[in-house]
Image (cartoon, rainbow, N blue to C red; front, side, top):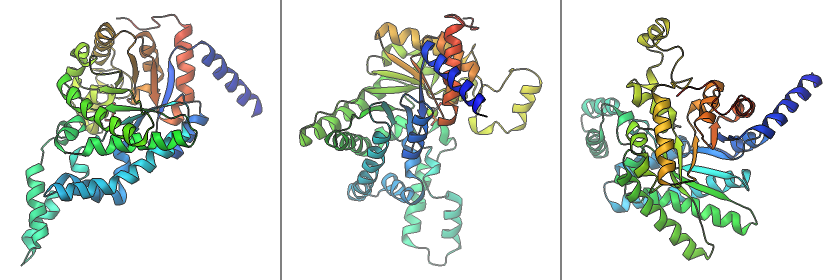
Length: 368
Ligand code: PEP
Ligand code: MG
């Protein structure tokens, strides 16, 4: 009823007035970005670009990764560039004036390669197999990984596929130029996923800066995008002081950080042992839903402390599923994060919880 709506609006207004945590949203499409804004998001904390490569574009990614030579790869990249530029332009328009954190491509490889078994069966069954199929099978066999979630993902992909980072960053920069010329106020940030060592970030960041400088030079519009990283591997958390030397911001990817800290797959939460663990009280709630304060949370604390010691004022957020979980929001407030980012529909709850966390005292219910 109208009374309830007014009460909720008042509670949100009150929460917004007292909370210290900013609330951003995870969004990969202009529609999601607009929805997030209506729910009060103060920016996009995570734009997962791999979601832009599904459907018809999947083929282009496959061509880019499996390219036989530079010409093939460059053709695929050239076809992807205008599509990406369009994606980013629309999202920056929907979030005009607010930060939009665009994450470089981070798909597990098997999501983009043709099915290996199917291909092998087709080649074996054909009397005269297509030369293209034989070549493709060979390439897929070479790239095969037993554990794709621990394989060629995130920054690793950017480091081994020539031109990929340059293409994505150019698309972002050209979108910034287009929005600037249209009188907008674009605030794009570039985020590098799955970093475990500062050396990875150093190499990738140099490529990012090169692409930004090229577009600035060509267009005459200075494009300035902060470059940061996800902290989603234990090694990243443990070496955060070094990583902060190359990162203008951190964003915790608590989905991967939980997976790699516990050593069980985020894709296997339906497996039998997982519910047995819940029944036995080995964890009180799924660590993929409510942040495990003692393990994953400890890594978060270490990374915040070391990151800020190395770079005072470092902006730090979280964009894993925990960003929208009420109990976890209290933890992130207490740990001194700057923002949480969650799915658009959870933005109001995160705003309320951030307000409650601020009111319940600096440490809240969290204990170190
Ligand atoms: C994460 O790992 O928490 C994260 C936000 O990235 P993704 O879920 O896309 O791996
Ligand atoms: Mg991740």
